[in-house]
Length: 244
Image 1 (cartoon, rainbow, N blue to C red):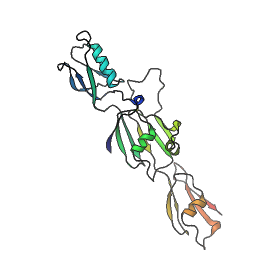
Image 2 (image 1 turned 30 degrees about the vertical axis):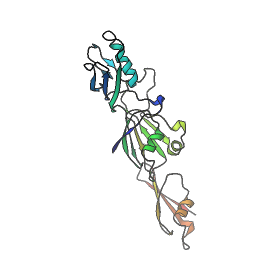
Image 3 (image 1 turned 60 degrees about the vertical axis):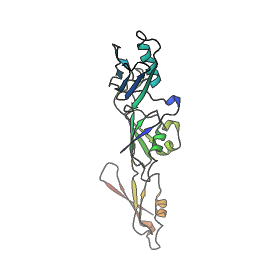
Image 4 (image 1 turned 45 degrees about the vertical axis):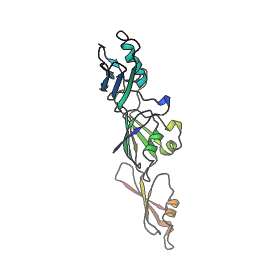
């Protein structure tokens, strides 16, 4: 599974620092205070020279954290120019697996929606079924507000609704999400047809359409004895239906 970086665009989608990210912190004319490769701790905090208490980096943008660091140094230096750069994006990872053309894991540099991730995975493959699922991370984000309701551990959407950009089926992805596209169930058309074949059930298909996709019936076919063998979901029981 590959690794891809998705770059920032709109201001509303600006990346917010999270645990595990690695930062470079540059302080103009104060090299003794500058720090390279500062890893944000699991609680979202970092430490800086001369400052006794930890500084919360998680949930802030690079600019917001730079301003906070400058404020903390006010007792020592006035109007310090501070720049914060994210060196490694580790906090916000999502993955997409299953019936897509490019299964991959992504380090997000901004917030993205489900449809956008699907385009980065080069779209659903020909094996894709009718649904797309999101398995949500169970870890608690330090940015989560106390009054926010818990997110369900699993979400499922109609693939066609997602591809059409339906807002209700195109949520923002959260760190740790795993998007899965299950493969379509299959049906088999065999017997006295011109082209026996396997058909993925990407959408509901009628019996007559399935026969037509197999090239139609041969002339000597007994049309009053078309057999449908159906396995009951979740069991080994097979049910036979005879159709005229």
